[in-house]
Amino acid sequence: EAGVAQSPRYKIIEKRQSVAFWCNPISGHATLYWYQQILGQGPKLLIQFQNNGVVDDSQLPKDRFSAERLKGVDSTLKIQPAKLEDSAVYLCASSLELSGNTEAFFGQGTRLTVV
Amino acid sequence: GQNIDQPTEMTATEGAIVQINCTYQTSGFNGLFWYQQHAGEAPTFLSYNVLDGLEEKGRFSSFLSRSKGYSYLLLKELQMKDSASYLCAVRDKGLNYGQNFVFGPGTRLSVLP
Image (cartoon, rainbow over all chains, first blue to last red; front, side, top):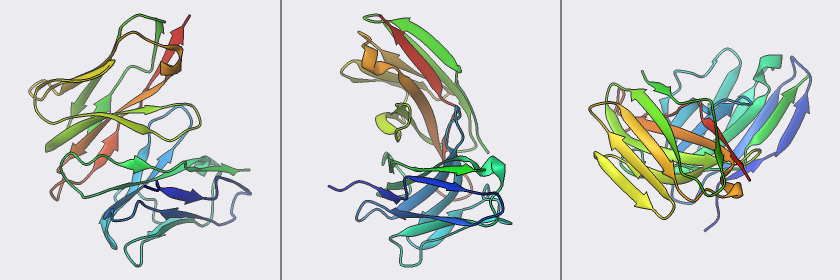
């Protein structure tokens, strides 16, 4: 079974530029998560989708971050404009359903460096 | 909201046993997960607890006490490859059933020869 795919693996941009990350979850997984992981910290939830609907985006900095999952499968996360403090690994994860003992499976992440 | 706490760093010796603790506060507990994350890699699932007690999986065991908001991950017969960060994550019912899969800060474990 293919895992969660993310691209690109690495990205370096200057502050105030924009960037987009792509995620393809495991086939059949209804729930998709985007996390931000700053070096030395645990993953911080940015947004959760159930199919193509947003379940929780309470910690997404909406003035600069946006995410969509138009057909309930792939998802993109965009930052515009980027700040230095956005340097982190952006992890996408998916799970079969929203509840119960279904664990989340993670992609390899995109390491973003803002200079 | 949730509050999840773990020790920042731990050190242990190869072949020993180590216990990594996690305390949490949630509004609607719906399960606790442990993940392992090697440097530069994605987190991988280790264990799940939703009822009180001990779950054993080979060298790894996880314990949960819901009344105390407490869990631990027990690693036996430590190997060098167990050097990694260990993340405690809680599924909290939140506003809607089954939402909010939230991670703690992680515990970085160093296994020494």
